Image 1 (cartoon, helix red, strand yellow):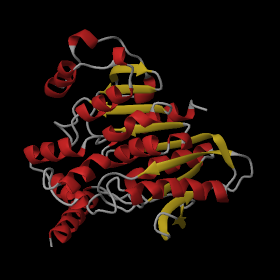
Image 2: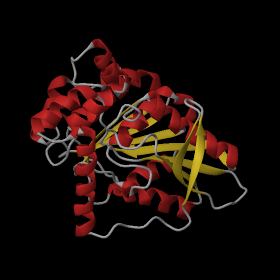
Image 3: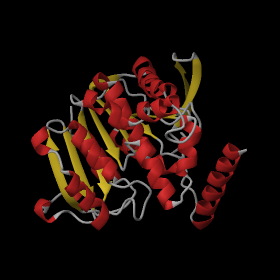
Image 4: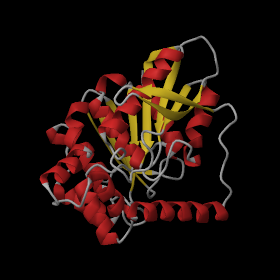
Length: 317
């Protein structure tokens, strides 16, 4: 019954959004396909684009958001970029919205992402030096997990406003009185502390548990300075993910992270001039690079800046 209520809430929310502004349509060149996921011998759906050219082309694996699925219209800018640049594009469902055990960073969901890439490799002419992964919100969480679990698969990975610690996010959602704790509970089998089995689910589905394995991956993590205040994921999730990958001397202190989160500002000792026109009006406020990982905090909330994300990916080979 509770799961049904969650679905109804999501449907009603989507209906309200649709009534306020028409839903954008996917480009007609994008088609629906199914691919084989060996983890449970199932056929899984995705949206896919291929111009049909025989020359090797980059691949963009794009991931839907927390409450979305593979047909969500908010992912259309990924497809438009790929059509314009003649990239291969796949947008897998990886078990749909994060409100049941098969989704939300589960082994099934993560295996689906890898299987989607494998399907593209088997059916298209791929430039194997340019295989990119991108996602925001729940898609950002999944992108970080896939970077850690399959580090040899990706040329570069771009993650925006990701959830990185499900136990922390559960508590933060309770404090903000939103519906996400219920969705996490449905995914992990109960609230944190319910049992050792449940706590293990929270750990295994959280990117922070695995990120040390992604140190060899070129990784860009971004968050809007106001997220957690005008959005659902405090930027501590992004900053802690950076710390998990950064060299010791480059990590942010607990006090600095708390300042970012509580004040919605860059700590005075970290302020420095930045110039990156790819972010447009969402000006970068703080940036740090350490080895293969880069973190950027920009003027914004719970969102992705598509041009900045895709230009960064395109620069890596």
